[in-house]
Image (tube, rainbow, N blue to C red):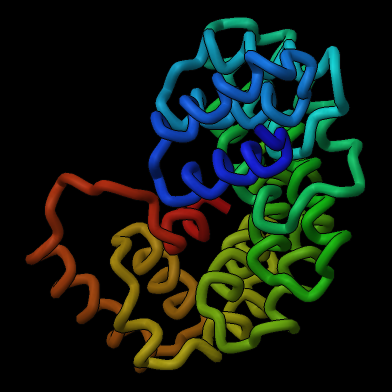
Length: 261
């Protein structure tokens, strides 16, 4: 049995969603090569996909004694520490993970989203978005996420506004960026700039807003600016939304993120 071929076979099965078959191949590999760090890491990742946190931790901890974990392996290990209640250890591993320079772009938003569940680790979520912005300064969504966690950590409004202005400059047609910026500007008492920011949102974009609080904030801005046509249009949208809105929701839409800023 060629260990490399066996490992690749297990990887292929895992990618097809065939976790149990992949684990069978890894078991064969570890029988003849028990010090294969890559096999132990893959085993831990597969076990995590099956929600087997404790055995996943054991496999990944074993892998760390043999090889440096990949960024994905380190993320899974840190996440599972948190999920079994080892909060300090999980936070420590996340902190080490975020110091790496080889984190895939796709993984950083996942790290930030996961850490957002833990108020004590908001600073780490912000760190993830800072790193994401550093890797791709032209990504407006990363800037929006960065601003969101800056607000959670009570950064000064001028600093948050600066981040959001850049997001708007990168994608002027994105209503989420404009609404987030306007909310910060209102909090800063800059009503004129807030109005100038949201007046650029097209009617077709306004019509897509499914958040009563967001519409109320826009109505407030347009009222203060005496922009009666846009105020009335938002009032009509609010009336329509109130008539159809249900009390349940399965996810947090971007408009709600903008609302919280």
